[in-house]
Structure formats: structure tokens, C-alpha cells
Image (cartoon, rainbow, N blue to C red):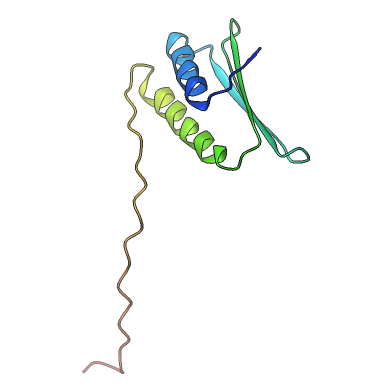
Length: 103
């Protein structure tokens, strides 16, 4: 088992592993609350990649990885995935109060 230090390297190698063998590749997320550590593991029974972190910012990266894997699983290993850019929410107009019954 190899612990990969860089998140970008881990994500790139995990996607390559999935595209090489989409049926046999799987990944596991394990969070230990007592240690505050998150461990991600991707394996295809021939190779195993692991990434360990205790940083809260990496939770967003894990969500990004989930979206990438879901896209590859749903559309096939040759699918292209687009990084979603989060847009700030648009302010909604307040609802107008009516001043009684319309006639």
C-alpha cells in the first residue's frame, strides 16, 4: 500500500486506475473521529493507493473526487468531467405582501 503525499497526484493516479479497470476498481473512505483523520483508499486488487489527511479543507476535495468517480461510473470510463465552479447564490426578491383582498 502506497500513501500518496500530494492530493493532485493521488486524484490523477486514482482516475487512471479506474479508467484502466472500471469494473474491478473500488474506493473506500474511512474517518476516525477520535484522531480526526480521513483516509481514502483506491484499489483494483493489483495496486493500492492511499491518501491520509487531518485537514478540514480536504473534505471538499473528497467531495470533488466523489463527483468525478460518480461521473465516470455513470457515463463510462471514457467520459470527460468538467470541474464545477461554485457560483455565489443569487439574491432572491422578497415576496410582496398583499394589503387585503383584491376586488
